Structures are given as structure tokens and as C-alpha cells.
Length: 102
Image (tube, helix red, strand yellow):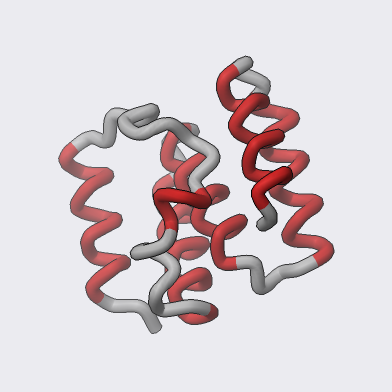
């Protein structure tokens, strides 16, 4: 995702326009299904929606595409830090996904 797209998505998130965020991320992935940052952002969106299984699969897919995408994710995240308070169960799921990318 380019910086302009990240900024547009950050603004939509800030405004609480979840449906538009989802639609935008989906449209990016239709054009480029290998966009690791779009996949990771969609994963975090799914966590916020309580959809852990989908989030894990998206994260695994992103890591298959780019093993280093997590390290670079902060600058490409559309979500402010701590925007989603993960439960201990959510954190456990994510840690498991990070340990074992297929």
C-alpha cells in the first residue's frame, strides 16, 4: 500500500467508518492479493470484529508473502496503536500464528 492509501484508510478508521475500511481493503486485495500490508491491516480489522480465525489466516498469508512484513508494519498500519484491546485469548491466537507461519 502506498502512503496516500494508508493515510486515506487511517482517516476512515478515525471516523469509525468500518464498512468503508473493509470495502477499501477488499478492493486493494482484489487488485493485488499479495499486498502483505493490506492483509495485515485486514487481519487487525477482523480482530476488532471478533473474527479470530479469519484474522489468523490473513496473518499467515501475509507472512508467507513477506516474512519481514511484521517488522515494517507499524509505518503501514492504518490503525492507531492500542486501537484494539486484545483479550488474552486473542493475543494467544496471534502469537501462535506468528510462531508457525505455513
